[in-house]
Image 1 (cartoon, rainbow, N blue to C red):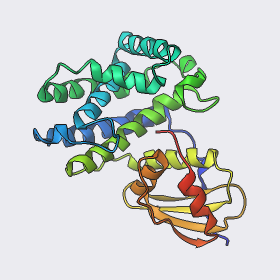
Image 2 (image 1 turned 120 degrees about the horizontal axis):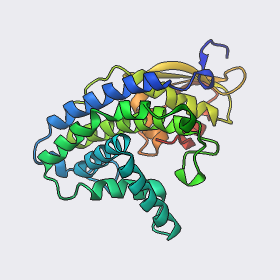
Image 3 (image 1 turned 45 degrees about the vertical axis):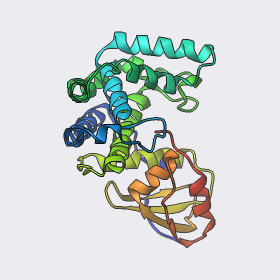
Length: 265
């Protein structure tokens, strides 16, 4: 099967300036969604099974605060590393727990205001990180893969996290998920990471709906074309759940490889 599509692995990593702009749009869309919540929405369960809506918003507010306030980031990270050493859990889970714990005393209204406060500064705070620091290779306990640099966390993962949690909040509450201008960039970077770790047959991945696009994944001549809704595939790759049909033309084994694949969110 021959077809032409951009190789996802050849896409550049999101630049710091683009990341700032995409994150700004993502936070704006998040705030619109949270502003529409009623009292019952805050207590609804989410696809992150240990979190209700309130916990998820507290995590997002805490991550945004860390981008604005280095002492808070250092306090949370230090506690998480100590917790890891003492066998209390993984660093990312301990970080999230600290973010949520800091906001346990807030009312729902105050939590929404807290998110708004820190979301305004988070994109710029991450953008201002010095170039030398951005080149720092993250330790293995960060859980982002061997050789991952801080720039990937700042410019790709944090934005991806907000986007996927917006999907989670939409599914939990049934409220509208406002469209943000940079969703195509978010999805493209996930497919890029998928391709960078892909060892299966080459194929063309056609993603439909919001954030969709068309890329080649894998080295060589594509043996199949797989079509899927972009949001559904992102949820699959994140390990959330599998609602994917993965409509395949050509070698059907590619769909099985995709179902087993995971990308860090």
